[in-house]
Image (cartoon, rainbow, N blue to C red; front, side):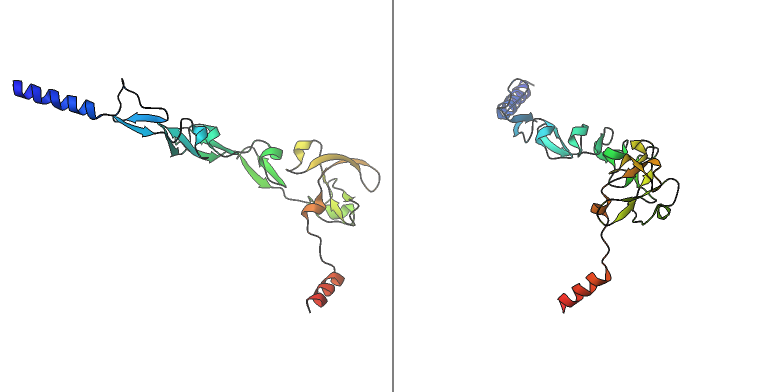
Amino acid sequence: MLVYFFALFFACSGSNKDAECSEEQSCGFGAVCIDGICVSNSCSTSAQCPMEQYCDKGSCLAGCEADDDCYPGEFCNDELKTCEVAPCTNTQIDCDFKEYCNTLSGECVEASGYYCRECEQDSDCGGNGNVCIHFGQERDFCGVTCEVESDCPSGFSCYDLSDENGVATRQCLTYCWLYVERPTSPSESSTEECAQE
């Protein structure tokens, strides 16, 4: 029995002697004690990890612990520790050009209708108070009637204007000529063909 006690004592003493660290003996700077071994830290906070990773016991792991671990427009699902696309709440901030935020579904949907449609007169814009507007770029585009800014899709604003009869109106507008490709005229097409020949 006495022999067994000494064998156990020396075995325990030997294991403690071999351990690099313990609760009483900490590791050096930039390392953490794991199972008696000092392991170098790759991080001390999640800010030192790549996006969609978080710091856990000195190592960067895939996933997240907070919204800051995710890309803009995403949030951290606390239960799954994964980054997910955040639902939209504001048309102008969360959605792409010519999209509305559907706050019921949390999704951005493309605006239908006459936004930036080329026109020659008001009737080309579908009625309902929509006005054909001359932008001074040899091209005219439809405005869409609105009352407040939130009536307009992303990239558009609600402006005070007058229709072709001088009646005051408010229209959703933007720099349409920057987004709508100019059609090629027959003369331009023939000139390009001759240049290629």
